[in-house]
Image (cartoon, rainbow, N blue to C red):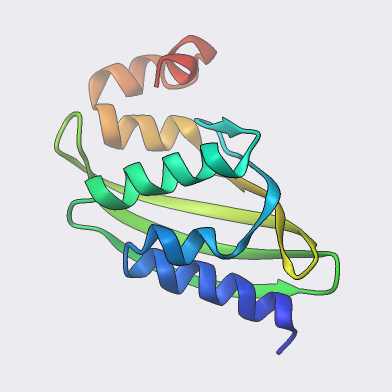
Length: 140
């Protein structure tokens, strides 16, 4: 297994344990993160996000598969299940993660998922009616 595949495994095994510090050890000091909700441009912002998500997680579960990586880039597919804290609704989020590496660490992490599907589960009727809208996406 390539060392960057091992790094992705380490990242997600830490997330399975809700270990934000273990996750942060996988990121380069100049790392960035992006998904449909967050655009983070520093390791400090990434730290704040993972700390918040790990400390507030309820009924959390994570599986990941199809981990691939080489010297420069990598990817994985994951499924996260959790109770969304603002509405207490159960969510199953299917995510495709893509990575860029530098100095043996993650320098860029980009997650993609269907925001409308997520918002319908997390927010109920408002998500169903407005989940396609960038206004709702910015509000979340």
